[in-house]
Image 1 (cartoon, rainbow, N blue to C red):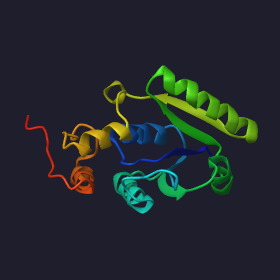
Image 2 (cartoon, helix red, strand yellow):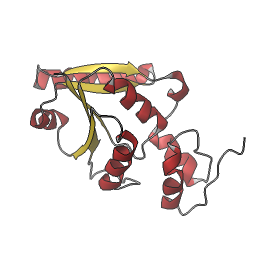
Image 3 (cartoon, rainbow, N blue to C red):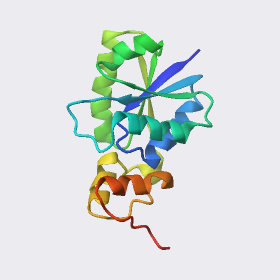
Length: 166
């Protein structure tokens, strides 16, 4: 059985994240979406909120579960019995960083392999950081995140939602 983890902060979850989850879930038997609890980061949403968002978005995906973890991912992978890491690549610069992480993880635990999926072209520019930047200034984020969470994101900034009127 191929069990993989798709780790990230998902703060907030984007359409790009969802695209990766859908695609990865078709490659492995079981996909764990691992929400990193990084206390050093000043997150927009709590870990619980991010887990809840992802659970809502993956509810109908039978081989996907959502959990949170802190500490080293390789240790968490041992806990859950996963041997595959799924990572998305938007650009060559992502590859350089992700390759170092993948090689380090494999060195620490030779059972761990990393699958790199290139992002769909429509999401190649997208990151949670961009979403937060646009939202913080009241920009239209309707093309970036699941519609269900647009108001929640603006609410974090005390801003009335703005959407594309096309």
